[in-house]
Image 1 (cartoon, rainbow, N blue to C red):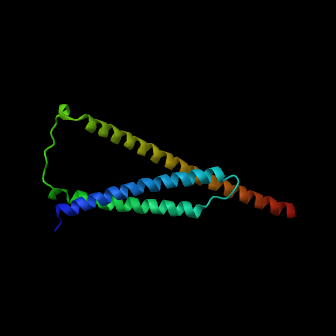
Image 2: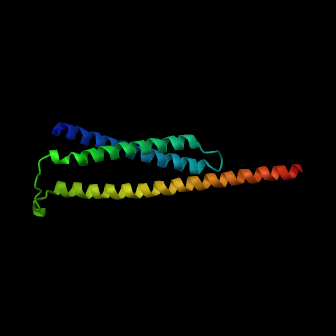
Image 3: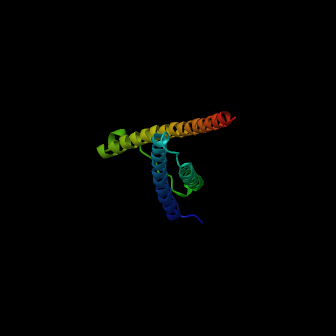
Length: 144
């Protein structure tokens, strides 16, 4: 049987996983950015980028499973009525809510930036492949 302690522990684990997802996302952004900036001089380490992406996707899957488990077991916690008293909100609570909204916006912005960078890296890889293919074709044509 699931207890309140289990839910608390799973919630804490989910928060830790969320932090790891955030760190993984930042690592991917940095790796893609570095690979993009170096792509004209050296070949990007695609294996490292793919590993970072797999790690990120694994963490997202783990977080998703934990969220599903928590959703399924939320009825164990007693229903706590939340007062709709905005006048009772403390300045600290208001500040935390603003910070939370700011962090969510930043997370969305970074997610979109990551998606753009990943699509750029794929486009760059395609262009590099086309350039290599073209140079190989010219090398064959010059030998003929």
